[in-house]
Length: 145
Image 1 (spheres, rainbow, N blue to C red):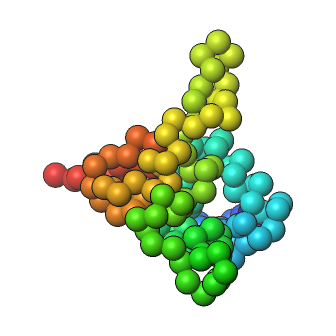
Image 2 (cartoon, helix red, strand yellow):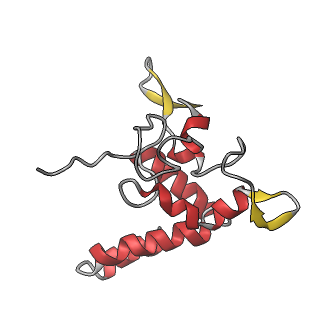
């Protein structure tokens, strides 16, 4: 994230093309391994109500070190558990909708539906299309006429 910010400040004309690529590389290589990066991404996704870099970007998590670590077989890091396993996680918690305290108008640490957000079998994040998943952050793109 810091690298992306520096790119914007130093090369504002190239920023549009490069910032997304730098952020994506940072997410894939460092999320879950470096505490500062993980905390930054979690805060950013929670604040912006997004998941990864692009709209419907949750598929980027499948190529991340976090995904491999989170879903690896306990004694064999070279294999992942089956996607049908309830412990399988496609996205981190920070991609999931949190409940709101309507008195304070602040988000709480409770999630709307964590299992559906991280491992829903009928649509996102498992598939790029399908029924809308109300538990995960993303935007549905409208079809142009």
